[in-house]
Length: 483
Image (tube, rainbow, N blue to C red; front, side, top):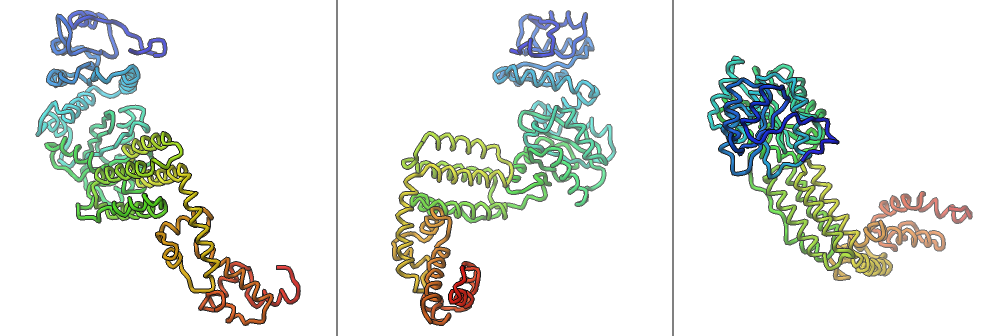
């Protein structure tokens, strides 16, 4: 399974059963033993029992199937350091595990033994109140105040468990770090805090955690006075870490910061889908982003529920517009990509990025949207030309053209780069320049003639667009100055 030519590891001995392996282990010294649970002559459990009697030192990792948990539990009690599920093991995963154990060889044996107790508790191979774990801890400290730190997928920022342990000892320098272990998807740290953590110290800890682990998030538990709910506490922190999607860095926080659940406004799904059907992307995006920002600010919705809501929005949006896409497979690939990103998203910025990517991808794939909007833009430009002398608004134009107000606004902005009011002002100021140059009308009369009822506002708009005041413009025209 492991490419021996590309690996620096040497397989010192291969045995067909446990008895044969024991004979070799008594004659030579090995760094690590990989042992199958099921073997002929002497199985893995009998091998470990005899291995322990003979006081052999190399760490043992068990290979097991999904249906062999009872045997793995026995293996842990007999001193196995870890286990690998054969169904999911690959050459790469085995190689990474071997490399990690080599990096961790300097860790004292008693720390390794404690790691085994922690893994037993986490993996369900021991039950509350976790007496062995508690006795180990209590024999080494006075007092009973603990904190658990949960890290979500910290592997990008680590070279192994020893690295995690050393980093935690540095961050929690005024406290005792008992254990720092990693699994495929998370890291768990057990810390003894002799004194209560003050706000300033907590802030410094979270900032240092963010610097050390920039690609993940984490939650520090409330103070624990017993390890009897060790596993339940880890499971609770796993759920609490999901609230990082509502936060901007630092993405490390305490369990107490999560607000109690309370009712929140439901997502306006009908309105959103109506805007999608009208191909009003600006309106649909605004509706979704407004809901997201309100949800993030109040943290009212359980994060998994919000992710399911957003997953449904992604699916519904792409399905609704699929007949209009230039390349439907491109959008299918985008959907898969965004759903995967959503599954692993752990920050507010990542969720916002997923929403923006959705609408950007849809916009690029809708040629019919531009054609339809082009017609709407031509109609609204004609409306402005015919009605600029009146105090018209975008709502007036939308009603006259029998179009949705938000949809018309997005049509104009997306296709011209300017808003309705910018186009209206441009037409009015162009006419104002003609009147100032060719007639004797006063500034107030011109203001009324082109649809402005407030002469002061007309003057501000004119200066912004023409770079000078109406009177200066007229004087310059009379002198023949170029403007």
